[in-house]
Image (cartoon, rainbow, N blue to C red; front, side, top):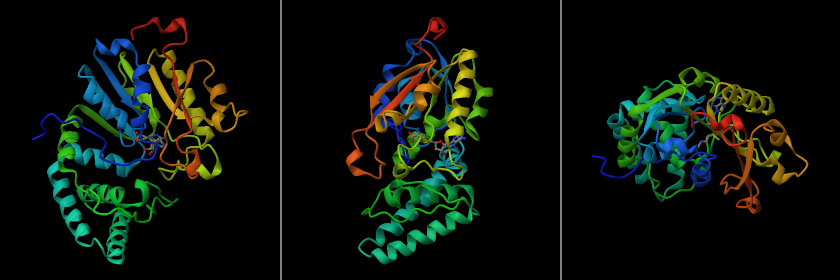
Length: 308
Ligand SMILES: C[S@@+](CC[C@H](N)C(=O)[O-])C[C@H]1O[C@@H](n2cnc3c(N)ncnc32)[C@H](O)[C@@H]1O
């Protein structure tokens, strides 16, 4: 059924990490190539790094993913447990939506009906997951944005015959997720599933570079500076517990040279600046010129001669 193809993200997601993977690979602890280990991703989003890890590290013994977005996590769980049911619903959505091609008004009516239905959150969980994927595939720029009432409010995108049901990938992802423990909650709750050989990768909502570039509202609660500080405190705790972690975030200093927010916050750890090509930036001239931060606790002091 799945052939030799590898699992890839089944969603478009703001901050998708596909282009950062080479940089992450460069700073991975070398011992994960030889030893079994646990991989934990507390802000999984569309899982670009997760799927890369699953495809490339057969020695991964245990995998834990988490996100605070309940609809996203419901979708992961449905893909893992009921792929055929999900595919059947998505095939209907795709057939119906493609049949409206050429008639923008009717496409819009269909899209907004599905969006309203999604926002009632009263469907069966497999239908809710299908609506989640449908909206992701047909909305403007693949954005996920909700208002304070947790109502998804992204308008329709302009795609012609978008792929709504990528059947083959859903089967491959479903297979890959069989060894993954899927949690929905705050990032700190992942700690109790860590083992002594754990590697954490954190990709939190990025600190906005400016007011106009703010696209970090994936969930109804805003991830503000206090949250960034809480995350740093959690990373410091993991460090004292001898876990290894890698974290990415926006490089606010590349926008404003006097902004040392992350340099100060992570002064005790190793900070690298890497090129980033972010898709979501209100200012199109700035797309392609940005730097991103990769921060880790594993290379910067003698402490890190331990297990990894
Ligand atoms: C930058 S995105 C992750 C992008 C992802 N790595 C990818 O490749 O697509 C950040 C994620 O953090 C989640 N999130 C926000 N606050 C959270 C919290 N307190 N605990 C766990 N997840 C949270 C959001 O729902 C969102 O999916």
